[in-house]
Image 1: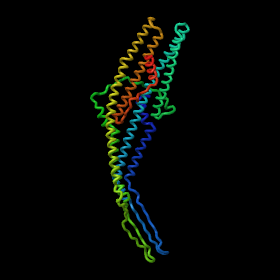
Image 2: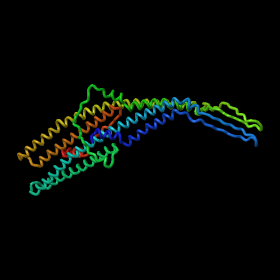
Image 3: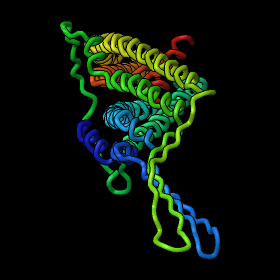
Image 4: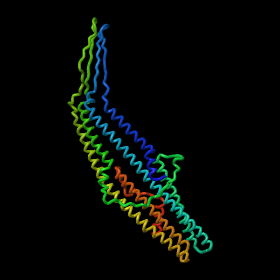
Length: 413
């Protein structure tokens, strides 16, 4: 399974996203409903004046206010349909990018797990050597205990990394909507080492504003608030406005029944409620949505700048780890091996240098993950979806963090 394939599967198979698609069908049905008039109301009565005479009254009325507000209600429904379309686009983009992040985490956790497997093997070899050296009387009990402690810590780190690897894999499965045999996939790729610098000629802030789905959704909220304010204002002033026809007939004691027909209407008189509250609420609602729109624009601009900066910094750090730290660590291993072959250092010292190199490679994996996550954030923002991360919201590889903590603690000691 590749990264791109996992994204395609998630977009097509994620159950939550499929449910969001149905919201669009609901909005379309509401648009059809908004274009229909209300059903007329038929009422009638029969009055028995005496045993041989009855008075009949029939009345058919239509809520005329619904006729007057029909264009406005259809406009509101069209805006709500467009909102539903934007919501589906946003949800699809969120699922795609969340899957991309989850798969990147899985790739990084898999590489970290492989490195910790090597680290555990090295510590177990060191522990075996320490036992043999203790048997020969070449090291003290304290040195033996220190070797065992390092080996047990490596086992704990290995277990934590294994747990984190399974957790990140299951997150990918959840996003893709897979279970059972379909969830038994194997990743066909590792974290790409291709660090692409940002194009200096691209205005990322402007591109984010132009493509922003969040801003488009917020602008529709302003329009809807204005339309609803006008609709509510009319309904508050004239809540009852009905017109129709009235039929009345009195059956005489002798002769044929004759019907009398005339217009009928009912309208509320706006004496006490003249819509002042509705107008005030409508204006406040529009102002509120405008402020939210302005705030969203500020957030999109800030997020685009921050994401672009994060990509630059994370890319530089990953390149430094790749081109400087890792080669230097490997060079130290080579030199330590030469000294070991010349019997200038012992096997324990050689293992310590190798462990340091493994930690450097772990740091490089972490730097790569941070770069690709930052790149994903920037891509998502440029495609129209706002991403804001708190400073403490960092990518996490449990094994790498345990190893780093151990190294720092050892340095301080």
